[in-house]
Amino acid sequence: MTAVKEVVRRPLGHFAERSIAGLVAVVGAGVAFGLLLMLVRFRWSPLQHADHEAAEWFNGLVAPHHALVTVLQAITDLGGRPVLIWLVSVAVLGLLIRKQARLAVYLIITGVGGLILDPSLKTLVGRLRPVVDVPVASAPGNSFPSGHALGSFVAYGAILLVFLPAMAPRWRKPAIAVAAVLVALIGLTRIALGVHFVSDVLGGWLLGAAWLGVTAYAFRLWRRERGRPVPPLTEGLEPEAGRDIAPAPAEEHVLEHPRSAVAELLVGWVLVFGALYAFGMFVSYHAKDTFLGTLDTEVPRWFADRHTDALTDLSWWWSKFGDTHAILLVSLVFCPLVLAVWRRWRPVLFVALAMFGELTLFLASARAVDRPRPPVENLDGQMPTSSFPSGHIAATICLWLAIALIVFPRTDRWWRWLFVAAAVVMPVGVAVSRMYRGMHHPTDFMGAILLSALWIGLLYWVIRPNADLAEGNRPAIESEQVDELDDELATAGRPD
Image (cartoon, rainbow, N blue to C red; front, side, top):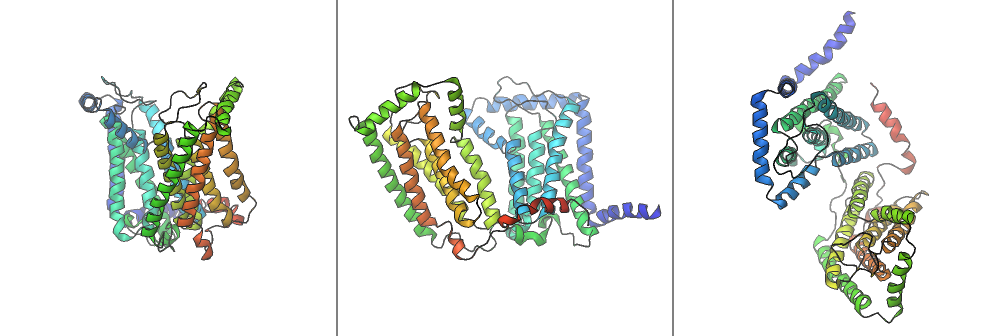
């Protein structure tokens, strides 16, 4: 019995020995949150009055300015569940690929804990959201504590603690400051948009600080109990893992000659735009009596005559694969994984420039050509851009072609052909859907092919995304080792 007590007492003693100030801070945050929860739960009048006064003041300040509301909404989205879940999930996958399973477990436990605390406490307190004169935003569920404030504090704080060792010492304090400012801004936007009271956001921050502190110090206890040094939190959770989790530790320069590369891309962009403009003007206004003109007239009519409810629903879903949200989602998952596996920024730069160039070329050529939509029913209604070229199709081609060009030469496994197939099937499916919905002519599809082929070809020549393969770069995890990730994760969850 005495031995058991000693085992229990020893970690607590080590915790207190290591950082009394940290322990006091964590306990203080928890106590402060508990006190605030009681005041909110029992509707303490002074707090309620102050909360409602602040809500009305912010509403009067923000509501008349639509541009400000848009900016606030963009900032507040950075603390929403979709962004935070994506961020933590990608970080966990990257850590597993780099064989840092214990840090991955830490992120999982910390993130899941934050997800559990938010709805459970909202249900317990049952506080209604603010009611303001001019609502500018809405949110489901109860109000206390703010899930955005809690989630952003926990997610950004945990990721910062994990990846601080990968940063140069001179960048660590600025990184901490940036994360703190971001969390503060997210909380303030919830108040300014009228979806939370001030005390909701304070409660979210206090609870986030308490939970993040508990998980961080539990991780530090684990290190101390196994005889490892426990560094200050400003150095991260595992300083010795810094090189292993650094994005590209062996890459000295992303591009050998960045200035000439920028000049080549700018000149190339102008030439690609010129080709698009020439082809677009021809098919839009000078090809009426040609084969292309007949194609643009007959194909939209052929699709319009064959509309059915089932095909219309299918075309809507398939068309979504080419919209901005889908393209951005795939890019934001693919790029971090490429960085984690091959430890090079150049493939990531290749994908980023592919999408940025596609967007700018599409917007510029669509504005210059200004082609009307096909003279059939446009199932997507009025669109802010013109018909030539198709942005949905061009974005889909550029994304999946760029992915295939990166993945195919980097592995000899059979599944690399799936990316080649996706580079064909995805654009064709989006193209058929867009033409079925009466949003594009066949030559708009051709314009998207022209844009993608010229721009991706130019980028491949200038950026050389696979140059590291000639230098003998190998992935952080071989394709045969993928099955080992689950074993590493399970091992990390067991005590030594």
